[in-house]
Image (cartoon, rainbow, N blue to C red):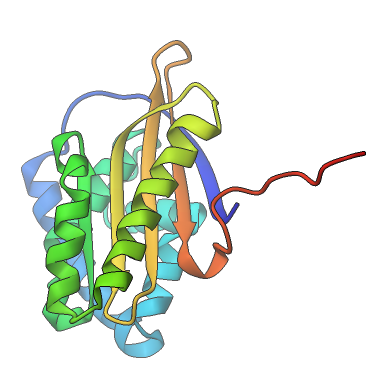
Length: 192
């Protein structure tokens, strides 16, 4: 399995204040520009796939609560800040109903980047399988409610998704990066 990490966060309800969210979007644009220009768009995706770097980014953007909202609010700010044609990468998906539109949005962005049909199918499969592994195969009691798929014009991708466990009062965030995925399922060798 190629997951890059997991973060456990307490479940908290509510919304980020509008004034903070607007500032997070503006600051996200600046950070994205610096990292993409200095290190490349794939490096930005790689960094977002690290749960500790993602948590630090959220704090730098001003959302310094150690809660489940860190994932949804930070991904929302990044999604608003990124112009796929300008930066060469995009964020699709989100919380609840937005996550269900991920395959359709992958197709739309992939057409912008002129991906082949097989590449589009591969990206949609990657999105679906990352969700399937973390929601069903892992069986850790966390039901996914947030799924974000990031893809670059070169075909690299990352996934940030989060599930909740009402019994424990915690959320679990899962991170994936395409360079770390050889296969979505690792079967143990048969013992004879």
